[in-house]
Image (tube, rainbow, N blue to C red; front, side, top):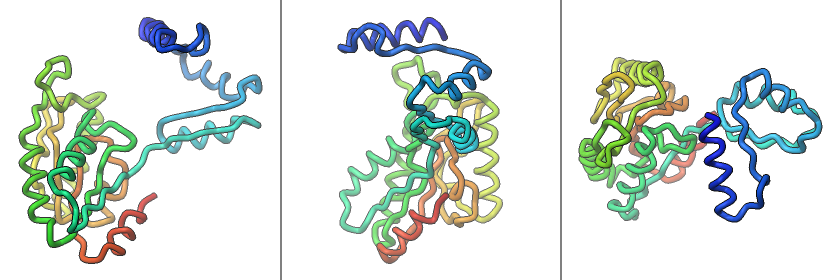
Length: 221
């Protein structure tokens, strides 16, 4: 909104930027397209979907282009890991911002020797998270951006379970709220593994050899 743009500019100045160094201009798609194509701008940076990002790059002319197009972040927990720290970091990485972060933890690969203990600890932590109004101080996981996205994520969860995945915890949806969800017994072809969920959803997979875990991490678009 225009008000948030003014506040951001004021914060930037208070942080030490010279007046005018940072300008925030909310605009519609038509004006945004003009900015992308205008040769007076030397750099274009975009954060969003691959479809939009690559389309903008194709129209950016001679500008330098920096694209941050989401991801399908994976974590490897080997048998010599500090499990308590791993659980803390995975819980924060997977469920903060209701999983709506381009670097949200989505795939957790755990060595088979420690996978049962890690699974139990992650389930306990996920179930303890409070889901609700983000304006309340005791809320850990707030709503998704809209109900449609929550429905989409819940559908992916249901598809995975119908295909043989185990719902270890979560999976409940109330409007745009989706409870922190952990899935096991997943297959690489499932949407929850292959695509960016962008929701409070993570999958847990055991592995035997570290090299196999690396191969699974790299098996991603």
